[in-house]
Length: 201
Image (cartoon, rainbow, N blue to C red; front, side, top):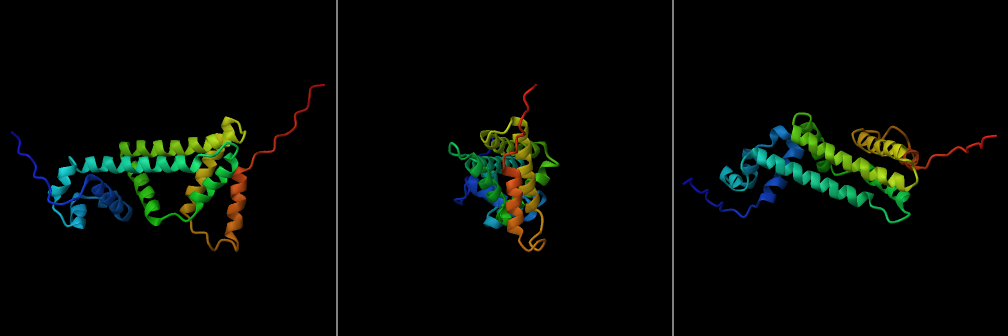
């Protein structure tokens, strides 16, 4: 019979390891995410890790799942509007995702996107999260009365803006950056002017 693994003498559970892996991912990227590093941070041996995970890949899959579920939950929360409140909710989404985010959260996002360039599983997770982002925002624009094609275009513009500006340093670009950001939010969110149609003579 195969020898049974000894139960670790620590109270660490599977989620503790996953959360620690996210911390390392934020600080050191995927290449720095090693079992030895995590075990050392907890002051335990690698045997404790293998009580909860088959191998490093098992941990990486769990990290991706946790990140995906957390992002989707937040997307649904931020894009859910009460009836008749779709437009204010669009402004809310732009404000929330344009605001100074936690450095840790942004570093994790960047690390996972870099990971996705090299790994099919990570790429599929990023694609799913981005699809949720775009489709939920698109539904808000549709609720505002926009046709589907324009709603999709505006949702893409929204996220191109909030992600793009989060990577830039522009505090000194203009004397009143908040005014610029408010103007951009209006461009993204406002309903288009629909030209009057002339009736055929």
